[in-house]
Image 1 (cartoon, helix red, strand yellow):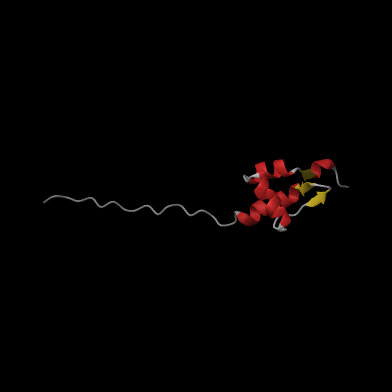
Image 2 (cartoon, rainbow, N blue to C red; image 1 turned 45 degrees about the vertical axis):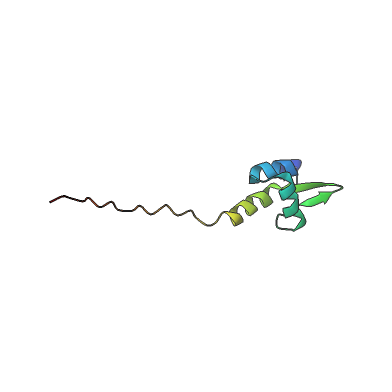
Length: 75
């Protein structure tokens, strides 16, 4: 059964994704983010926000390679 807690507003989804509301609406219009338009408002499933986050952040950040310091000795 679908409940109201299964959906987010555009503002809530934008906050969760770290985007502006305008960019979140653009993602919805381009169907990069799943959602339903009810009248003039969008409803975004919480699962869709989680899926989008996983899709966009799958590239692991590699730790910076640490350069070895050479110890110079004076002779």
